[in-house]
Image (cartoon, rainbow over all chains, first blue to last red; front, side, top):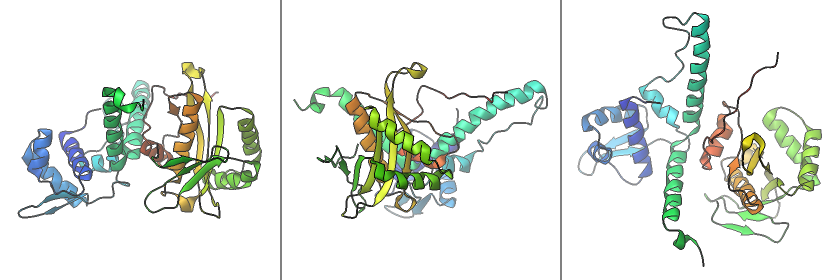
Length: 149
Length: 169
């Protein structure tokens, strides 16, 4: 599945800020960390601010901070700010044919699974899963340290 | 797994620290005395009253060592009923290596988002691990956001199997 650039930037920003709740990060800090356009990210951050997911402080030491509830906000909540991933079935050339309808059933199934997946993963869950994976990889890289004997 | 998990002498009961200032949770094997509360909680959660099913499930888990019917209760002196989880080790169905299946979980509504579900999940995973399996699995309705979010928060992700079905004409 391919998300639009703004959606991906929005997810980067929300996750980066939520992972560092005690820090205020500038658009330039986040853009540098992900190698993305600072100007484009600044626009995305304004959209996130309007949605109440980040707030910003101006001046020296200012920057953005995650202001949502990481246990409640899902990936779908962020994605929906930037693009519509609901099924676009039943429209377009050929959609009103037997084959068009059969094809839409399959495409609708895929969209349904995508929405259920994004809607069930909170910001906190994604960050927790990332930390678990890092710990597991660290244990696998240093098996001697993990064993007591 | 919960870091602060203590094995107690009483029938492999385990104490789980829930964090966030919540009281600890004790997880132990179910007894027949727990069934009325399990039936009531399941009825509240599903809208279906199934005493025969739960009686049969309890007796099956009593008979088979790879099956687990666990109860969460408050570790304080009142031992308040908080929830339950049921699971079992299954092997080779659908071409799967032996793994632990979580069949159902229920937490008393007023005690949700307080670490009870995590304590139950940790406890059944410990028992599955003791049974020798390395994977835990469950199946959910696609639109069951509550339980899907819970299991994902425990680190579960889509596995290598996919469920297919069709109405039989």
